[in-house]
Length: 403
Ligand code: SF4
Image (cartoon, rainbow, N blue to C red; front, side, top):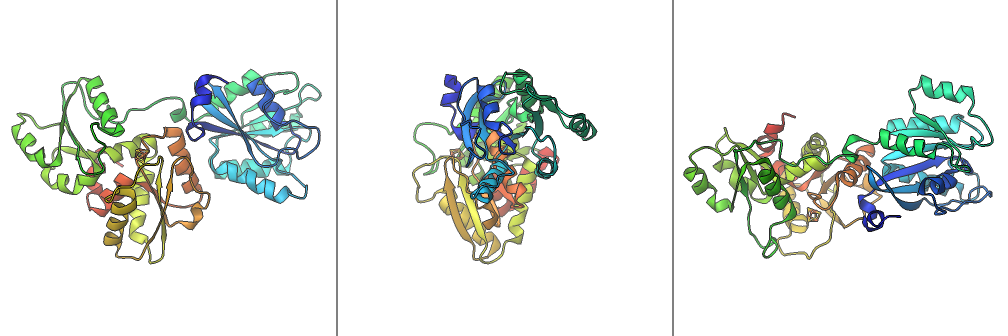
């Protein structure tokens, strides 16, 4: 394993899951991909119980986690629990490899393919054990007819393992292979962009927070001119400028103060909206925010933050957002909180998930969290989109994205 693979937290890695029958050779295939004996391999059926995570570096995807899962046909005493654990892994799977051993594609595999399609998980079939048998024409015809990518491999002698790696890379969603801009596509060289940066109690001492720094860097990289100001100075800045700024980017927490100060012909958005667009799917977050209108008494809301920090008396996640939501909905809502790398498994219990700006997560991990919610029909939004909704300015701050 490279230093990069070791140093990348598990939460930030692309998750590739090996799914298949007991003894199809999932563990051996991970060994072959990693070129080391990292997974448990045994001729005894059902050796792999709960999913086992193995880190590996697969460029250009970077550090990935390979999940070695229990057999989907596991008939042992704990089989039902093991299969449940395997299916749970699918919620966080970015790419699946359906491993077929001696049996080829039968009903068990077809059921799993239907599940991948339902969950919109990109997948590939690895016909394993090609050192001792040939893939049947029936199975090849099935793949061709259904437009399914497949590779004939042998974990035992290394046949086509590099082709399998390439096939995994090929089916990976584009956002996993490239970094996209936060704001750099919204202005041009020579444009003026105003960043509204409040310095309240929750602002860290002596520095800007990561979203502000990243946007500032993109403004400078583009050759545009950056102006940073506190919300109380915005009117003076607009009065002093000879030309209107191309864009104003505000911290979400002061958007209710900023929006009325910005003339309608100046583009306005928030840092959180930019992160929502960059890290996930803005339309999904907007739908999630609109689900606030349907909340009822007793509904549970999950407030999820991707890193831990000391809680201040006016904490955005713990205090401000719950208060804004209660005020907006006038409902008796129950709030639960998660912090750090763990995203709860019991997502179905929530009527809404409100996620932080996710500046510490990459697109892959944020996309995975969104997919976990979408797959379970749980609306998800983020802090900034939710705040804009409760402050009545959501339409204004997403207008420039033509959703
Ligand atoms: S990851 Fe989330 S909680 Fe942590 S600093 Fe970024 S926005 Fe805040």
